[in-house]
Length: 273
Image (tube, rainbow, N blue to C red; front, top):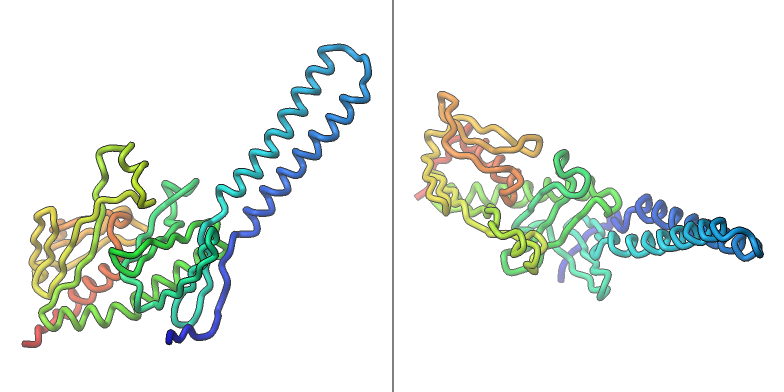
């Protein structure tokens, strides 16, 4: 039986987004209704006057309907409840619940969406493993930034020590990263909303290898630069030359990767035979 722990917070559809859209839609519909009543009371007024009011009425009511439809479109398909030991995902279309323990989260992907495309990382997706679906935390989720921060920190807390132990046992810790699909249509039509081509990074106590053919001895890595506030994560040698680089927004569990590399730079891992 899963021990969810104490309920800490609920994260549904952000009220600001919901109410603003509904208020605007209501005002437009009322304005259209008022204009329609005014049009009916004009009697035999001029044709152009009636035509202008009719067009304004149709525009107001149509825009109100569009906003109501838009509200349904931006409404998140999943909402969340944060517990001490994990996250409860509530799927709105079928009203199904699934509890994801923090230690069960395998991959975290952070990216930009909406009006923040070129600014902050405002969206997170996470999954249990490569065969399981992604759960998306968008800006339309109430207090999404807090929920994202908690999940990121909990992954570091649970997976960090496990990964260090694996490295000390001469094992390998794998990370997925994305490559852009050349076909924009193919990316759009794909079932997975992240529309990704995944490749692997394999990190051991000795080397970092990638599916793209990069091979970096860990003993040559002396510095790491980049993070969530930077475009690119770079591994640098003692002279500041780049040995390897990957965009932050292409690497799954990028914060865990950075934390492991920083630890390995400061404390070279002795391999236990």
